[in-house]
Length: 181
Image (cartoon, rainbow, N blue to C red; front, side, top):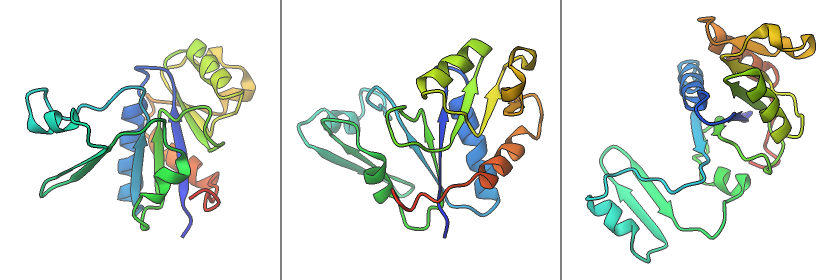
């Protein structure tokens, strides 16, 4: 089974989570088993401060597993950000698509989707990822401002089919990441 790893990147408040959510739903509806790896620069707080799970996270335990009839969440204290290969090893074997939201630029070269709110944002994102061309760009960008070479990468989020087109582009440009998976 081929496995696909795609980074969803862009500045803050550009729609990365919305794009990841919709792409995930489209791929799942097409029969794929999808996982999302969310990268963040802060701790995750899933419960309000007054809950027991927060009190347990504030102990010296290195691993806390929170288990309900509906989901299991594992919190592991680390000294540094884990690598993509180590995160992928934790995934169930049936997963065939992984979206990495807010993918760090220093990680391995994987296909990227840029989510941008302006032309300036697009060029800043491109610079952050060492001038790598994305699979495609989405967000609120005036296509008149993008040069003709890059205009073909732009999918307007006002087009109701832009995420279906994005799915097609991802699958057409797929790479097998079994080397790091």
